[in-house]
Amino acid sequence: MARLGPGTPDALAHDRAKALSMVPVSHETSAQLDVYVERLIRWQSIKNLVGPATIPVIWTRHIADSAQLAGFQPEATIWADIGSGAGFPGLVLAILLAGRPGFHIHLVESNGRKVAFLRDVVRNLGLPATIHDCRIEDAYRQLPEKIDCLTARALAPLRELLRLQTFITQNPCIGLFPKGQDVDVELTEAAKYWNIQADIHPSLTDPTARIVEVINFSPRASNGASA
Image 1: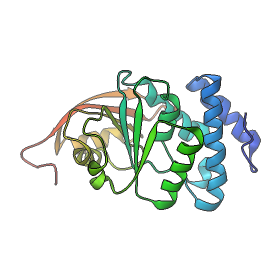
Image 2: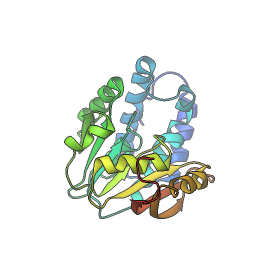
Image 3: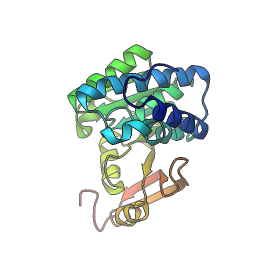
C-alpha cells in the first residue's frame, strides 16, 4: 500500500481494509486508489479539499461510498459527474471503470483549487476523464450530447439535482444520486415539481442512506421545473 502521509496511518489502514471489504476491487485498482488517497491527503494540507474530520475515514466515507455506484448501469459508457469537488464519486468511478470499453467520465467543477487537484490526479493516473472548469448550468456547452449516466454526491437536494440535470442534457439519461437519511423527505419534495420514475437502493456503506436511481422524470405542469 502506498504511504499515506503523516497523521493517522493506523486509522487509515484500518479504514482502507474495511472499505475494500465492502467494495472489493483488483490489486491494480486498489493501488490506483492508494495513489488517489495519498495525493488527496497531500493536497488537503494546503487546499482543504474535504472536511478535515473525514480524513481518518476517507476510505469508507468517500471511496467506498462512491465506488458502490460502479455496480449500477453496466452498459453505460459516457458518464458525467456534476459538482465533483475532490472527485467523489467521479474520480473513483474513473478508476474503477477505466477498463470498460468506451468508458469516459466528464467531471464538472467550478472551484479552481479543486479543478487543479482533479486534473493532477487524472494526469498522474492516466484516467479516462475530462475536467470541465465551469458552472453546472454552463456545462452543456462542453459536454457530449449523449450522456448515459449522471452522478452527483452531496451537492443539492433531489429537486434541485433534477433541475440541474436539465441543463446537462435533454436526452434520456440515468441519474445516480447517493442520499442520506432524509431521502424520503427529498423524494416527497421533489415529487411536488417533477414526475419521477426512480428505483431506491440500499447503501453498502450506511444503513440509513440510499442510492436514488432516477430512470426518468418530467416537470409537473402545475408547478413547473423552475419553481
